[in-house]
Length: 343
View (cartoon, rainbow, N blue to C red):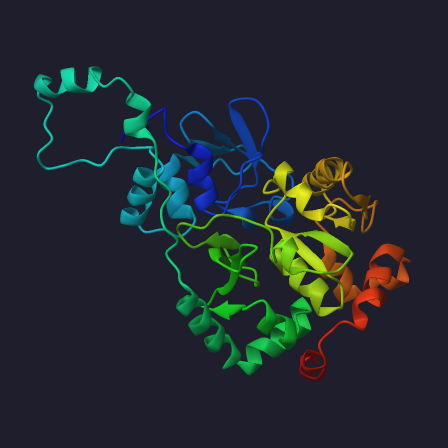
């Protein structure tokens, strides 16, 4: 299988739910997605790298390696699905039964005045609909024992789960829709909240990553920008107007304008990628927003996150005023019907 150098490597990995860092060079550092449980703390400090030239990847910790095809398999795609995804993003060409190695085809390719046009990938349509979102949500709401477990172990509350249209697909993963400013569906994340050997987060094919919920759909003047949908749902369940970045490398500088004129508290995980992301995000926000970075515990470097802090209630005992203030500001704004059903 020959990978075309004109392919959209970033788009390919984004469709898998893995946004690559926007940095110079020919490689991108990421957490190991092939065997995260074989690393300490789930490989919080990235030990893997992905070639931005051909999509090949290698984990320097556990030794796992492969190409773009193997990456798609590691994220749960079928062999056929992996091939289709590579074709979609221009990494390989679709073979036809009529194709042959005959030299007669060579001149027509060479004569193409714009060969990049022939290889330019087309974005695949999202393989999920609003009907799927509704069906998955109904499936979750029929599982009161699971909702109770999410409340006890993840700090997720019923009212917030309903508001964000969280669902449960047939594989047992929780579905979290990503919507635009006009509520159009642009993607779906598939989250595994319990420890397993597979990747924690997958994306439905055709997903375009974005902020969850979209900032234009949150009216609060003071918001928390947190790492990952799970922390966002836990924070909103505790009265914080939180918005999620899908991962430490998923932030895009152009999103800063969506927070213009607001106060923003950036809360990322307690590890090197989280702190680097917080600094990068704060820099982008500083020109148009009143931004502060909240480090949950400067002494920790083990991936301790906002959900951990909420479960331990250390956001109060350690005197974290920014988060406590957010809770007070938005406690009165919580919907009465949600407040009565959550606990």
